Structure formats: C-alpha cells, structure tokens
Amino acid sequence: MIPVQDLFEVHLTVADLERAVAFYRDIVGLRVAHVESARHAAFFWIGTAGNAMLGLWQAGSGPQTMMLHTAFRVSLVDVIAAPRVLSEAGITPLDFDGRPTDQPTVLAWMPAASVFFRDPDGNLLEYIAMLPQAPQPGRGVVPWQTWKLMQEDIPPGDCSEIGR
Image (cartoon, rainbow, N blue to C red):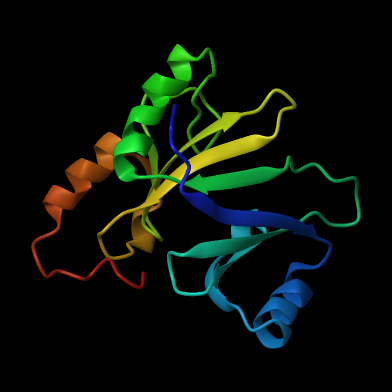
C-alpha cells in the first residue's frame, strides 16, 4: 500500500479558459504556475509553489469529455515503487498519456514524478512527488529513466533550461 500524505491538486472544467484564468488570478488571488495553450489548460499554485495546485481545463460549450482527476502527494520513493505496487494489486499503472507503464512520468515544468491509475469508476488518480531539481519546462513530459539521464546532461549550476 502507498501511504498518501495529502491532496496535491484539483482540476475543474471551464467554458472559457481566458476568463477563468483572469478570475482565479485577479479575483481569487492564485498565482499562475503554467499555461498549456495547446491543451487549453492553466495551472495555479495554491499557497507556495509545489504545495498544492488547481488545474483548469477548457471544455467549451459541448458535453464534458474530461474524466475527474485527483492527485495524491506521496514520497518520491513511493512514486517510484507505485507501478510495481499497483500492478501487484491488479491495477494498471499509466503514464501521462494514459498508456500502461512500469515507471513514473516526470512533468519537467514543475518538476514532479507521477504515476496515474484509474479507480473502479474510471476516475483518473495520481501519485505525485515534487523533485528537487529546478523547473525545466523545455524538457516536456518524459519517462523517469529519461529524466534521470537528462539530469546527467545538465552541468552543476547550469540553469539554461529554466524559463524556456
């Protein structure tokens, strides 16, 4: 069993992403963490960066197509172990794109390691752990083993990936 530490993020669908971003930024006072224009999504830090997050996804005027998603903060050791633990429990661990995986995925813009899976009703759940490296948004979303190799390619003190 993976011990859950706390809730990490909540996702909401919105009809107009630009209007929603302005509301959560200007009215609610949340700090924009990242905008994924191609995916019609925006993310906000709740409190300090890396503590908790709100994700907004534009659904438009058509029927909602996004499944509900909840992420649980766990230790990095447990994220790394999660594919094995989930598989042993008869649950398919998934990568960021929903494909079966045997390793975590790293979202380099945060950066964080995560493993996704579905509950019996099809809701998307996630175990996630923030990583100690600086954000590297230009590196995208990569498998854990690729992330580890990429970190070897960055000389100590080199921050050229930050802010891309």
